[in-house]
Length: 194
Length: 194
DNA sequence: CGAAGAGTAGGACAATCATCCTACTCTGTC
DNA sequence: GACAGAGTAGGATGATTGTCCTACTCTTCG
Image (cartoon, rainbow over all chains, first blue to last red):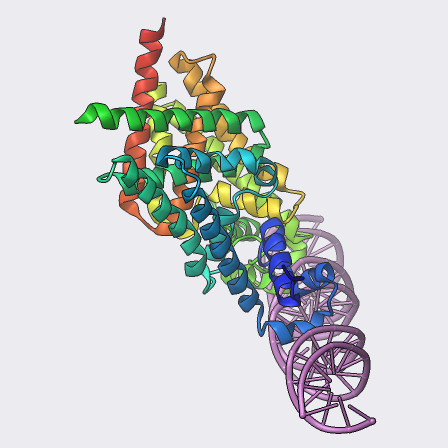
């Protein structure tokens, strides 16, 4: 590959800092220090702080899409893929305990700021929602696919929020286990149902 | 009763603004304008912004405790009271769609700010957790009472986060209905179980 | 070599922030 | 009616913010 351009470095550092500290609480100075660049020089790469936010959200959208695409090529079943999604909570448990869910916390911060980019951030949720709906459709739950997708998202947001508050890993594992059992019962009922 | 003192006005206005705009994004000027008081004069009532935050959290703790106490005196069953808790999502749906859950969003904001009052804000969660645990114990689920309490909290946090993102009232009602069914099954299993 | 343009350094800029101070106006008491 | 103390007004302060400008250093290509 190639070395990261300064612009790419800014975006990836800002991504991490926005996640850890929040968007508003992260200043140009913070990013500049982390990238080892002059503060005032940002103007050359990004006209405004909002432009950096847009770039960060777009990067997250791209990365997420790539992750989901890769899952699709693994020869697993739709059920396996949903399980993989649920288990992100375990995989990323350390970060989630420390900073919550990157999607949920960003969305709710931007909502409070009445920020123009709120709609963009919501696309991250929509990306997962659409993908999950697709998986449930493939599972044969076409009629309820969207409801089921939202239910999975609800669960993961709830777990992330409480994990962040209580730093309780046992709680996370217990809830994930329950969710996996729920998924099994959804699949079983689907075959019994008709 | 008596008219609200200036101090009480500041606290209740700050409470509302911290909820709607977030703590960091709310300035002294915002609060001063809403209370119709001179900005610089805050120092007389509160030494620092953090002191206002403490007062706001304490007020929320008191109000919440009062609400729960009142529920306890209604002659309802523990199951009714848990249902009442779950249905806060419906009662406050407008505010939740607009600003999320007051407890969850504050806790996660303070976590990102590494703010000293994070522990205080967490007490709001703990208050509900302890109360719910108590209700489940009364229901006869003593062994799992804390797990069940956390499960209810997880659910309500997840619904609040997604309601804030998607502004979807049907989704809220559907999830609340599912949660009530889940509660019924918990109660039923408890009698079958032993 | 020398011109051009990409990228950078460093600081200026006005705005906004929390904080703090001093001078003032009430209100009640002796 | 004088005094004390609670409460207020309004502005000063220094720090920090996002933004913007100008002068500089590279690299590239003729």
